[in-house]
Each structure stands twice: as C-alpha cells, then as structure tokens.
Image 1 (cartoon, helix red, strand yellow):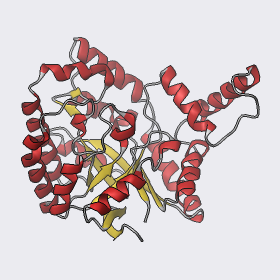
Image 2: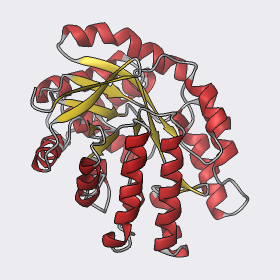
Image 3: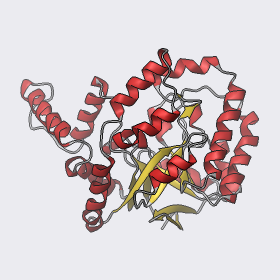
Image 4: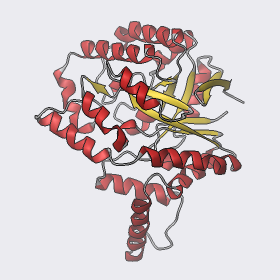
Length: 333
C-alpha cells in the first residue's frame, strides 16, 4: 500500500524563495488563465498568493492541494506532521533547549525562532481532525501527527506537551546538536568547528536517548546529520547503525525511509543511507515511508524509488498508525 507519513503544511522562514516555491506549487493544481509572465498573469498570481497568505497553511484551501496530489499518485494514507517549533504555544520549549546566546549563532537562531513560531497548534489540530472525513470519502486516510524535537533532558516537558492531543502518531527527531540547528543553511559553517567522528558519535547517542525515551512512535531521519555532506567514512559508522537498530527493536519503535534529503539538500541521499537501511532490515526494525514534503507537489516524491529499495533488501511490510497503535501492512498490498 502506498503511504506517506511525513508531510508538512508549512515551515518558513518567509523569504522570496519561499514565495516563489509556493507559487510554483499552487500552479501545479490551479492554472492562472493568462500567458505566463504577462502583466495579467503576475496580477493573478499576486491575488492567489494574497489569498493563500490570508487563509494560511491550516486551511482547506491549502490542504486540498495535498489531497489532489495524494490521489494523483495513488496514496492511500497521508500523515501530516508539522514541526513542533511552528507553534506559538511551544516556543518556550525551544527557548529552553536551543542555543540563544548573544553571539552570531544565538542571534540567528533567536530570530529564526521568532519568525517560524507563529501559528496556533489548536488551529492545526482542528483542521486535520475536521478534514479526515472528506479525505476518507476521496479514498485517502488522513492521519494526525506531529514532529517533535528531542533534546537531552527534555523528556518531562515533552510528556506534558504530547499528552494534550489525540495523535495518530508522533515522530521524534533530532535537528540540534548542543542547541545548534545543524540543518539550517545559514549555520552550516559550524560543521567545520567539530571533529566529525566525535560529532557523529555524540549525535547518535542523542538518537539512542530519543529511542529509549519511548515518547515516539517513529524516530525520524536517523542520519540527517549528513545533510550538507559532512560525514566520516561510513564504514566507521556501522557500529552506531547497529546500536541504533538494536535500540529501535528493543524499544518497539519504528523509523522511516525519508526521501527529503535526496531532493531538497546537497547530500542527495535518502535517510537512512542504503548501508544503514540494510542493518535496520537485519534487525527487523519497523519502517514507514516518508517524503518529508513541505509543499503539496512534493507529497510522495521519490517514494516509488524508496519502495523498490525496500523490496531489494527484503522488506515486505511497512508501518502505519492509528491512535498511536502501529499496524504493519504488506508493502505491495
């Protein structure tokens, strides 16, 4: 069965690049009836984008594009998991754990948080629950999820946060190393400050802590530290891969094959790497499928290739979720 369990409605920051990317996405589903690059076309584009900004990402107008894409490519289940840091109600959680000192990195991350933490989780939750019936009638099951960052020592805070909503599933992920957001293109030069072997060792220790916390149904993009191509010899990482696979198995947690880095970032490789994926398969770790889409036209991106990769190493089932219960189904169902 074709599923996509890692889909975002919006992220920001709100740059001209974001504006242009949003326009391109809308144009895949809503054709403006004027010649491209004409004055009338530009005015029509501006009107549509003005409406999109007024409605916001948590609207039927925007979510309907995701449904159209899901139907177009034959998906049967789609999980929406906006980032926890998007929500104003969760801003204090991030202020407690990310690096916000009065220097370049701290100032940059403080500004980033102020910009992206700007919407209401209540509006998000209401939208997804209200739209489930419409999606079901169109032949696609819509799932209500969240992607929550894990930080060492954050367990009590996350227990309280996650208990407030009836999620179908929760993805736990690690985007920060000692408070530094390593996947932010504006901070990637900080990779040069670290010994990569030490950096990966400590990063994978945090991944293990996230797994053993038992807070998450899925622990996402396990090796996303490679995002900008900074990675030691992978042969030296296989011991960590095996430890993580064993921890996932022992804690009955799933992970994902996530195509996002393959089409959105310089590394041009899925998470986990093929070698990591083989080890996860050997430990029989449950795996779901994820595009990590941030725009509707990216839903399902490269998942056919991911499916073939799973089949090539003998994986025959994928994990789906309902009210935090994992359900394993045949990959080819």
